[in-house]
Length: 369
Image (cartoon, rainbow, N blue to C red):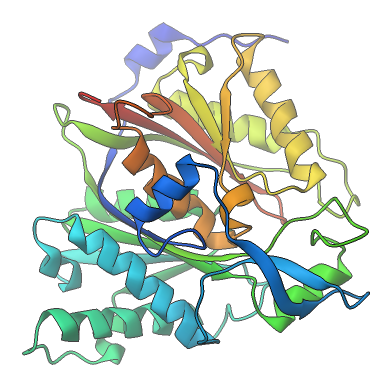
């Protein structure tokens, strides 16, 4: 059954709250900062390489990683530091990023089924990175990592946790609790526990299995504020959530109902029609389950209109889990204002979790390219 966009109903709704992306940072396999990574992504470059991890046949597993000999939590902390520093360089008042009275910190982390998700791991990780940044920026700073930890909110919901993070930012800004929100996404599959779990589930792209993903690592950061009606820039205008009964292991087939509902909810909040879109950016990572689901949902949503340009990141930076959504927005915030290679002024990005969570976000650029 075909559903049409009701312009009268949309006009009766109050003006949606818009989030403005004021600055962004990205540290991933193709670059330590956003500008370098964007150039590589535009050229469809990757940094895939053989690793010390081995498949069940003792073949080296291909991964997307940064060149560094530090491992464990210090490695992730370094990527967070790179991303936050990158974000700070695009700000008028970088030191405000470290002021808990002005800036709230929200961290997107892997879901609880993954390793290193409990006991405040990511809160401590980000707090330590912020403490190091504080010491580097202000020699007279006295706060300890424990004090910084109290301003960090962790959302352990994986890829689709982006919607929860953005809504948390909207609540904090709408209540005027802070002036701005620093949204951080950080994740890595490059550890023995995650690698073994994905190998057992036959979800890695290895010899003998083409239905899998290439594991990666990344950290990304966004500085978000409320947008005024006359503001120019890149804005988040709609967020949609839904649950999908289907599961990647095939125990329940996916009919793309959840993703369809999430997309429609995002379009409704943003008050746009699917036919108005210029592009979509998905978290498609090489697994057939998610590729089929997104194709079915988009076909259902578009009503036979023009085919959208389909953008992806995982084929360049690997599967980066909870960092995916923030990395997407960081990249788009850099690319959409560019006159010579912008993907368009209106797009949607969508993400899916193994547990059934589905998220869609409408993003718009206003102003000159």
